[in-house]
Length: 369
Image 1: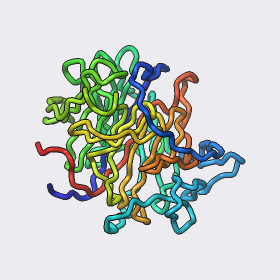
Image 2: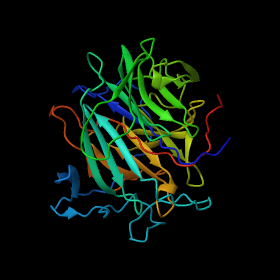
Image 3: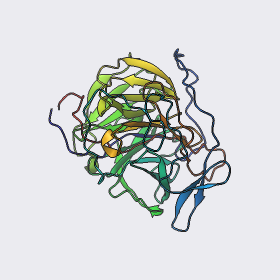
C-alpha cells in the first residue's frame, strides 16, 4: 500500500438531527463490558464572545484562556506532558514529525447546527468552539434519526441524513471555522431506501458507509459499503465490503479511526461506538472486542502528527454534548473539555450526534478497489 500525506477525514454520526426523538437501543443484546472510571469534575460551559466563538468557563465561573487546559487528561499514571497534564502513550513506534500546518480539530452536527472545535496542538485541550447554522438543513420528511459526516481528503465535509425510508447526502466544500450561517450542497438520495448511520474515509480517500439494515437496534442486514463512483456528482454506486450481521458489535452508531500498537492512527481496524459501548472493530470481517463504555454516539481518534508531544488521542461526545478525551485502552475519561450549544427544542439532546476530524499519514487497512 502507498503511504499518503496528510489526509483530512473522519467519521461523524448525527442522530435526531431535526427531531427530539433519540435512538432506541433497548432491544439490543446486552454486552458484558467493564466500565472505565471517569473522574468527577465541574462541567464547563461555553460563553459567547464578540467574534462569535466561545470561551471555556469552569465550574467556579473562571474563564479559561484559549489554549489552556483545565483537564487532567485520561487516567494514565505512566505518562505526563510537559505541562503536568497526564496523557497516554501507547509507545512501541518511532516518533513522527509534528505537522503544525494541520490544525487538530473535531466536527459535529446536530439539528441545523455545524460545530467546529479547535484543539490545542500542545496538549489536545479545547481552544475554541464555533457554531454555524445550516440554512438549508438537508433533512428528510418525518423522523430523522441518523446522520453521518466524514472529512474528505481535501478537507471538505460529506454528510448523510437518513432513517428507515432512505438517506440523503450533502457536501460542504469549505467548512467554516468562524461563526455564521451556511448553505450546503445537497447531492441527492442513495437508491434502495438504504438506512445509512455513519460515514468513514480511509487513508486512500475512499468513503465507506455503515448500512444499518432493517433498523438501528440490531445487526440484521448490517453491511459495510464503499462508494465506487462520483458520489459528489450524485452517483451513489457502491460495493459491499463486509456483511456485518455476525459482527461482534450489535450495531454501529459511529465509525472512527483506530490507534495501532505503535500509537499511530489507522483507518482499519478502528473504534466503533453503539450507544456508549465502544469496540475495537475490524471493519473488514466484523471481528473485535468490546472495550467498555464511554460517550454516547460520538467518537473520533486524532493522529500523533497533529500534536507536539507525538501522542495520538481519542475523543468521545456524550448525549449532553460534553466532549471528553478517552484513554484508548481503558476508556478512562478526562474531565469535560467543552460543552456544545443547546438546541432550539429544549427536549432535543444537543449531543445526539457523532464526531469527525482529520486523519493523518497512514497506510490503509481496507482491501484495494
